[in-house]
Every structure is written in C-alpha cells, then in structure tokens.
Length: 266
Image (cartoon, rainbow, N blue to C red):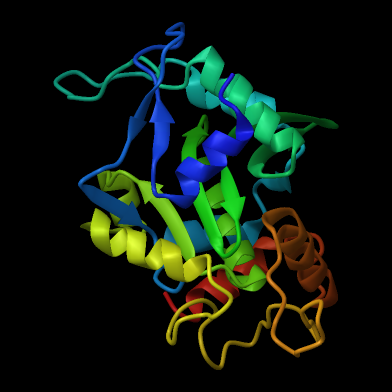
C-alpha cells in the first residue's frame, strides 16, 4: 500500500500513481505534459442530461459505497471494434487499497448513482477521487446505464461549487470529458492553479460564480472569525446540496435544483 502521506504529497504536487495492470504490484508516478480540468463554472449541461436530472431517474449518494465504486471503475471495460481504448485497468489492487485507506482517513470520496426498483437499489454509476483544500482530483468514473456517470459528475460539480472549491482535476482529456466542458492546458498552468487552490485566497473569477443564487454556506465563517467563507469538503458540500434541495421543496428530486444551478453558468 502507498503511504497516505506520500500519496497526498504527490497530489499536492500535481502527480498521481498508476499501474500497468490490475495485478501489478508496482506503481509509477505520472506528471502529464498536458492536463485536463473541468472549470466548475463551465460544466456543459445538455438538454437530455438536464431532463434526466429533473426527472429524478436515479438516487445519488456520497461516500456510501466507496469500495464498490472503485471495483466498478477497475473492472475491464468493453472495447468497441477499431477503438484504441484498452480493456485493462490501471487501478491495481495496491492502488485500490491505498485509496480505500485515504477514504478511511477522510481524504478520498465517492459519489454513487443508484437505480431503485421494487424496494431494492442497484449501483449503476459513480466516480471517486481525492479532495483537499479547494481541490478535487477526479480519478475514475463508470456507468452501467445511460447518463449514470454524467449524473454523478453533475452532482460533483454542483457540490464542489457549493462548497467553495476552485479546481476539478480530470487528469487526461477524453472526448467524453470534452463534451462535458473539460479543457486541456499545459502542466505548468495546472500547477499554478493547483497552488492557488491550496492557498487561503480565492483568485478573482474562480470558484462560485458572482451573483449566483447559491452561497457556499449561509453565514459561514472561518475558524478565526475573519468572516471569510468556509470551504466545505465534498461530503459536507454534498449534504448541504441535499439540504438546499429539501428547502426548495424538491426533496423528491434534488436533481431539479442541481439542473437549475448548473444551468446558471452552462
């Protein structure tokens, strides 16, 4: 298992681990030349995804099935004929154990998407990643039903915005991420954003959009009473999002509030 202190130092330095296969005991550290991020104010909410959110087709939770999400993300993927995609997994058993330990320590989180039928629920999508300061580093996501992973990402973006985050790292650009609003930049630029997001000062134009109806937390202040908005970790931000939806009278379908929030800057 990778020591948690080393793993967190790597993330704070813009580096992350991968493995060659599920059973590979070795890891290697990656610092991409080009980095993908998803601007929190630039999530592309398609009409079909907005409709899925509003209808409340799925139930979404946070940190209730972290290991199951990792297992699903590590499972071999279907490869289309002629595709350059690989069917193996870079999430080795050693890497999974390391992130499960981070989760136990409160530094790695998951969002789960469930389909509920006849009193039972089935895990149909989700994502996981590492959170610290105003940063969330997305590691992997999976989908077993149409739009399931997109719904997980929509909830993540909405929660991060509500919690005062400024940087959502996606590591590598893919056509799927590009369609959702992700952008690519040199690693040097990413490192500058990463450093800013770890500082106490939010750069102008970053984070929650000016004039947005939702606030980070009503009346929140930091521990020294300076009056600065508190930064919420993903679990607390997710809970605040659910509470906000309940207050808006949409408890049966929090997705309505999320679609509204994401539409404000999409």
